[in-house]
Structure formats: structure tokens, C-alpha cells
Length: 97
Image 1 (cartoon, rainbow, N blue to C red):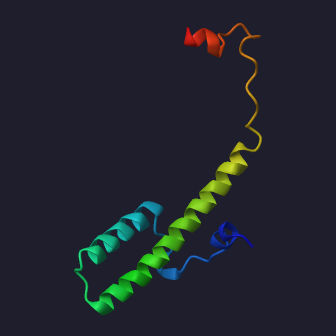
Image 2 (cartoon, rainbow, N blue to C red; image 1 turned 30 degrees about the vertical axis):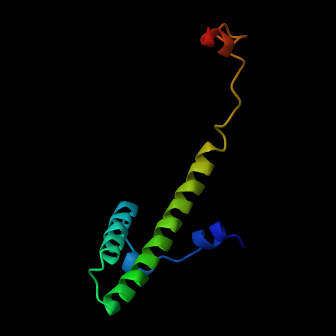
Image 3 (tube, rainbow, N blue to C red; image 1 turned 135 degrees about the vertical axis):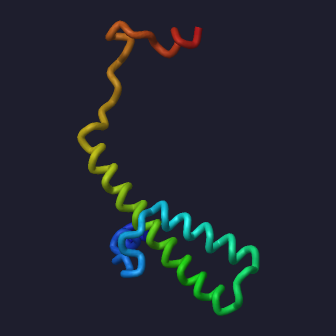
């Protein structure tokens, strides 16, 4: 199993259920800032690190889900461009002049 597959197969922990991707990223940024500033006691830092780890996994999982949805949506839509020169359009060389 690849890392992406493992990330996509993770079950969302109950404490992260219903949390939007944006809210998770905002919380993660806040945690990182407070940890980098040295504002937390040791025990709080360990808790913040664990919460941050959970948030990173959650965000990665959400991104993977969206990536899979985009691939499904694009499956029938990705087609090579028609030769625009044959259709009376300009070519790249004409645009460059």
C-alpha cells in the first residue's frame, strides 16, 4: 500500500469530525506559531504536537479525497486539443510574431 493510499484509508478521529479543511489549517498554523514562540509549557507542547500531528493527517486525508474526486471528474473530460491551425485559428508561431 502506498503512502497516499494509507492516508486516504485513515478514519477521521471523532475530535476532528465536522472540521473543515480551512479550520484545520488555521488551527494548525496557530499551534505551530505558539510552539515556535515558546509560549507553551512542556506538557502543553506535547499535547499541541499530538493535536498538530492529527491535524496534519486529517488535512492530508482531505486533500487526497479531493484529488480523487478531481480525477473522477476529469476522467471523461481530458481530451487532446484539436489542431487549431486546421480549424482556421492561429498557431503558436503566428502568436509569437
